[in-house]
Length: 313
Ligand code: 5GP
Ligand code: MN
Image (cartoon, rainbow, N blue to C red; front, side, top):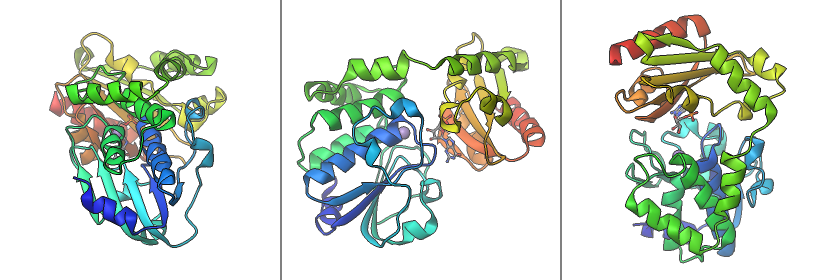
């Protein structure tokens, strides 16, 4: 399955690993797991990644991440990104790579790179990274296991979504056998929140608007409100699921203002509507039940979105 990727790695010394912008648990878990695996193979390897929510700072290896790529290099390994424009590097940085490996689990993608493994039947990039690391015959140690566990846990809603398959659970069992710190990961990511985050949630609920007889729930929080609570961009996520949980909801949307003047849209579906179709129509992407894109005009783009959801309902 990964034979040609193995050859690319064997022929490379200097390797960079990257995932998508707005790194989430799967982006962070999969990249740093591959980072530790390639270190064991003696490679000169780095993860290039923008800043992310500080809740992930406890994960092993993350302190070694770099902000950019300032040199030519042999190989880029891109994880969890369906499209090369969504990678957290510039086109120039991408072009500095002699070869590119793409590993992804999105249903709809624009394949890129010299070697591709794309499988939307896998729960997460971390589940694919597990198979990839095994194929390199590297031992899954405690750090790698904890990172992969984190990616799978976060992308499957703590093993509750339909993307958590029997295969996923078999992988997770092996990660636990290899020392994944599951209790610690759950405590830090699921059972701990800053007070400011709780206040953000209160604001989100306060600002909530309901459309189509409760089938669509929408909330918007401006950048000024987020900043006023002392919350960083990256920590302002994770609100949409609360809206989706309300009885009768088919589509939940959370929009937050960003420091650059744009608006990040996060959509969740209960399965009746494929929100990735809506996201793609507005230049974004994602999965049927979780997708997103960027708005530039909150008033006009909001109206368009409400209309698009109405048509899908
Ligand atoms: P979230 O709502 O957690 O930010 O994103 C949910 C999913 O939607 C992500 O896993 C990602 O696949 C996708 N997604 C979110 N924003 C974008 C975007 O701007 N472009 C693309 N292509 N996908 C996005
Ligand atoms: Mn993912």
